[in-house]
Image 1 (cartoon, protein in one colour):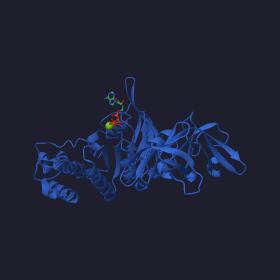
Image 2 (cartoon, protein in one colour; image 1 turned 180 degrees about the vertical axis):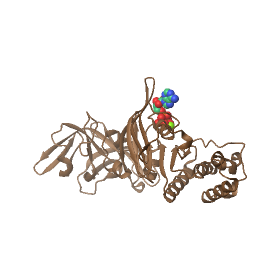
Image 3 (cartoon, helix red, strand yellow; image 1 turned 120 degrees about the vertical axis):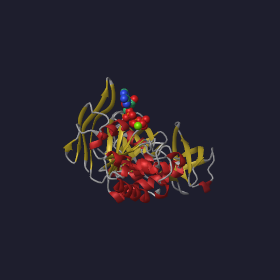
Image 4 (tube, rainbow, N blue to C red; image 1 turned 90 degrees about the vertical axis):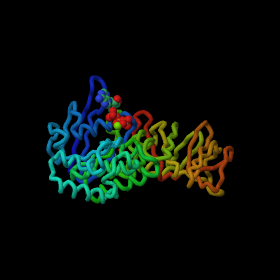
Length: 362
Ligand SMILES: Nc1ncnc2c1ncn2[C@@H]1O[C@H](COP(=O)(O)OP(=O)(O)OP(=O)(O)O)[C@@H](O)[C@H]1O
Ligand SMILES: [Mg+2]
């Protein structure tokens, strides 16, 4: 099913929950609504579900306005953070509940619940009560209950945040896999950018009720259009260095800062030259130690955080500038070690400090 939001707004008095959001979700697409706490993700989802009435704007399913259609007639499956299973009912009764409401015949209920439960790997647990299940099993039941109705649209609101890290990883893969197999259009609310990046076909980034960007994970990562996106997407986050000036030097472009002077590829530099002071962005994985004899920017290791596969190394450059990069733990860098760093200048980003917009991607 295709979903379209047109100038969607939700206000309570002078509190603005959702501020003029427009976006289109294709049939079978998996879209994440990503943003910090309080940005309006749940409010958006509840309007799509029909539980909240929009203050203004329209919601369309397959091109038809559904604003007036009650939740039960929207053919939506929902999965929440709190699984909201009925504790006194068995797994079977929980999963069959939406079918019972639709007055589906008993044997048909049994067949459909068993089919979905087997697919979710909980077919042997149908006689248990939710209290006798692990968190992951409860979450599967909640997902199963959303699927038995054969919904045309699945809505998820932070469904994995109650699970431990390991199980979250497993369930993340599982939801993605089921969604791909079934091809059900899905909208997935999360404040966890890793979850959004790994699961979604496209991500709608929301801040203060407004849509900041709507793009594929790759685009958001490689071509962030705003400073907010640059700092929000990616972990560890992109380095953002203030007070950089880009100047033309013959055929070349140089990015000059108190602590360094970098040669920048012309296709990036030409958009930034003579723009005054800008913000330079560079991801930690695009910084490396200079090879012997190579001219790098000089600094001193400030602190080292072992992440297992890599060390996250924070370096102090002259002028009280700090940048972090990823280093091989075998190098055993220590606070105080002098280092020389190189940037992969094919990957540098530039932002206008005033508008906070990218100077490279519009
Ligand atoms: N019923 C309500 N009445 C008044 N204000 C509300 C109501 N529901 C939400 N809000 C406000 O609207 C804004 C958006 O809330 P929402 O629940 O959509 O945030 P969220 O992005 O889901 O955050 P979180 O990640 O913390 O769940 C918040 O400022 C919130 O306080
Ligand atoms: Mg929420």
